[in-house]
Image (cartoon, rainbow, N blue to C red; front, side):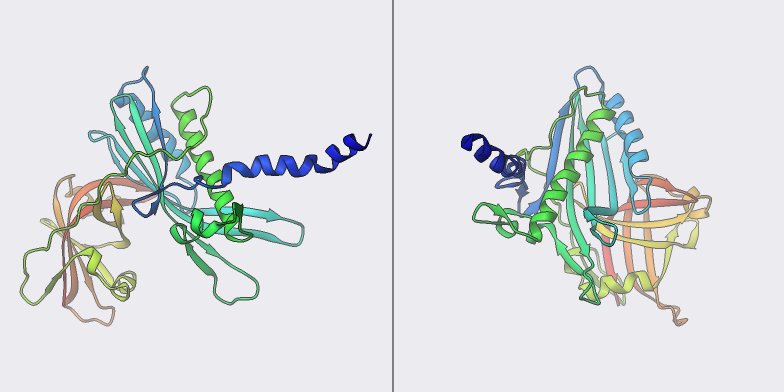
Length: 319
């Protein structure tokens, strides 16, 4: 009888320990210093075109929610990319809701019958009642083994972020499995498939009155000024106002994104592979552009009445 009572007493703790195991050492993969969850799926009964179409359809639906966007799709290269902003929830009661805002990037590369999906560039914003400003974390310095584990166990705060991020990655990859008709969804496991090597943007040619730069050398204060500046797109058919969406890395290349009206002149005159110039000017009426970014269009996606244009950065110039 005592043995039975002993077992019943420790049974819940045993279950918790078993459940906790998948979140411990090695559960968050780090490749070249970056947190990269990835899933490789082989579908022998589908062509690469069929795989692309199924994933494209799934991503359009999955990333249609507020804060999420399918930002790049190229059927010829078998590449798709999306960015997301949503909440991960830690606990909920009648009086309190504990959650964090997560930002991330998902890319998919298709080659023959295989696709490689990657979840990376993960960051969090977390509001706490005793602080006026929310706390901000990067996955690399918050949910990795070094920061989220102590003596083989999850830390109290960063550990809950680690747990929910792993669950989030599993859910995302399960959706991908189901889109490809996989009968048994597989758990997202850290695979040692290296991400596409980043390609540094070469130094651009000089422009009179401007100083050349590259994305990796732009100060953060300059980047923070871009959304507050007047942004325009210059093509061979004219110059139109656009909305700046930001810079980033996509399939190893530096990219810039802008939003334009779906039926604007710029949209009608800009094809994949065309080059264009994004210019930034001051909002106080100063006519001269203080910054220029030259791009080569690599893709677009429609978001309500806007078209999101993604382009490879060819050069940056500042005054």
